[in-house]
Length: 300
Image 1 (cartoon, rainbow, N blue to C red):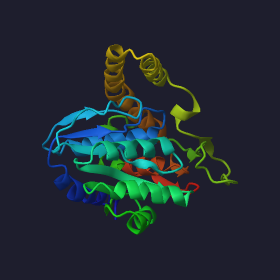
Image 2 (image 1 turned 60 degrees about the vertical axis):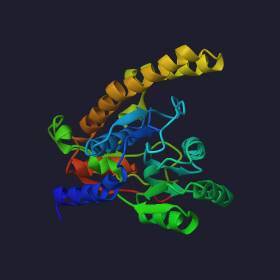
Image 3 (image 1 turned 120 degrees about the vertical axis):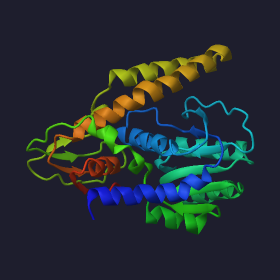
Image 4 (image 1 turned 135 degrees about the vertical axis):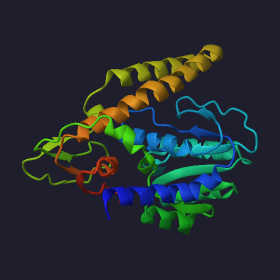
């Protein structure tokens, strides 16, 4: 199977399963306003998928800019996919639980996630809360997560590819660069890295450029979000709401496109890519580049 055939098959699987479920106006929440290009690629794929939906996006936000607005019962709540379902990146899971409790009458779809719990009691507590919402659909992006969800959660569970496979590949081709005779070992620098990770000789060792050093575009977003937090602390709600909207618009119109472009320009020159980050592998596939994926610490 060629790159094109595989990508098309994965994208079609997502569309065949999810497009019929987004049959009304919707909101898209828990977006990644942080410096991980991989999460931004998921967001890009979600937006491209939603261009095929004949309904309006009524609201979008992150865990830093949500306001829990009143929603009509037929409004669908879409929650960003990724690898933070469980107790490792707890802030995002707590946000999902708040949404589930706050909107008991709305259909909620959690886009494809990796699921991992170190604490079994927490898994059971989360499953109990989610079981109380009879319109919740949870998507797993690989079989191990799917089995955890099918075993412990009583909601509707779907097994689907990562949403980054919905990215418009023609858009990625705009930033094509000449390939050089270099190999990349992309080694993640966070708590998901396996201990004693061997590194092949003669490779350039990097992480996402946005993680290796702060980017100006990220600093601006952090300043806006910092103002939000201070206004909220002092109860200045009319200004707080303005800066929430400003953060959302800046993240969508400036931050997201720049990070997608930076990820593509970063990977294009390399001949062979070895990576401990899932979305470096996915972006390599989208760019039709040879890639070897080395798993993270918990089977992502």
